[in-house]
Length: 170
Image (cartoon, rainbow, N blue to C red; front, side):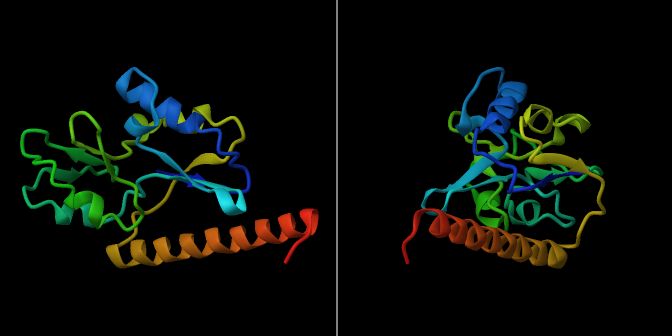
């Protein structure tokens, strides 16, 4: 399973971030969420970013201490005792989906809330949905990341055109 995003439905309300942080930390905050809404102010686009559960996950391979491992479900698990908080996993993620906890320094990665993601349940517009999927290979994960960027770019172009039509300008 993975979480799919329909960017045309995302309003940037950040309820997914609030639901996630509360489910995992018992408090609300964007910095402690495992999902992040990327906002492109100049063109009015909001896009939730979260772990894609890559097969042969680059973040796991990049960890010099072997502190990360991938479960059969594809989620990334951190061994806090081994983790040095170096951030190599953050740098290795092709999606920009891993961040370090602001207090503990441990990697924050989507664990799909044990099969019932709180971000999906809390999304008021239905921009997030759960889909069954096969795990992509590392090469396919990179292709998907590039394709996702292309989709975001195409959506951004479409939104920009609508804004220009509505408000005028060059």
